[in-house]
Image (cartoon, rainbow, N blue to C red; front, top):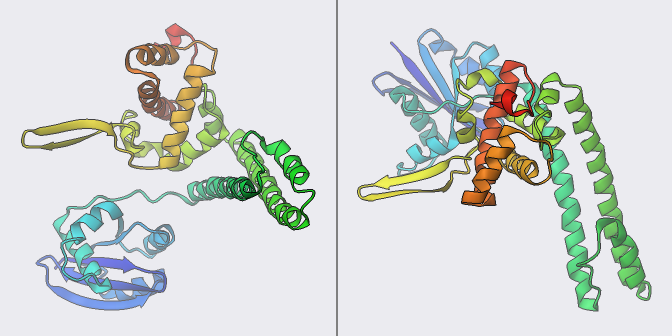
Length: 342
């Protein structure tokens, strides 16, 4: 007899449902969200358990690897696809979701997700924390710019370096505003100092990584883009063709077709949005700032003349994803000459 297990994971507890190949429920329970506790519940079905599945989430990498080490045939399901399948349920409960996941595994109609390595997650955390510090510092700057407008202080033309001096000069006659502004400026400076520290860590990590150094040979690709691309891909062998990287990062046009309606328009914007943004910025930098000649830049400039700069940047970003994957797999670097690029 074959069994399938569905896991609906939350922070404290996990709902477990085990069904047979005919869809008969043989176990419904709830255990602590710990790999050992879940594996112990599934132990009686170890020999007949075909698959156990859970959705993507914040605890998914830790739980997935823990269950794998314990010998559980675990798969990670794409949350967007799973949510659409479970939306037809009348009542949404943890047990119902666990049963639904088990039924999805039994039917075989699911999309498994690659669980990234610990090194990739560490790189993603570094990049995420760096990005968060920058956003919080910008939030404080914008709050200062907005609140001081009530007193006629206009900072719209003030840069980051001269902002503190301009605010202190404008609030020198108002002790309360001066103290409030000093507190915000001090908090902003602390965030920017930590942002610069993490930026140096990103640069050092990318410079010390052989793959990132080769990726940075592409014009427009810097340490942040190279490290983000490597962390997002993690294992280049899971992509059989380099051209699929464009679709993986949401840079291909989406299509809606139903009957006589057939629409192909904007890009899908699926996948890692940060990598997609960085690839777009790298493409823009290659077209506008980079002076070195390459066949890739010539192709992008020709496309910009006929279709516009924004569309050319999207198309070039899609190609950059393929080029970066090729460089990673082949162990090569970017060639600037026309003949070598061809």
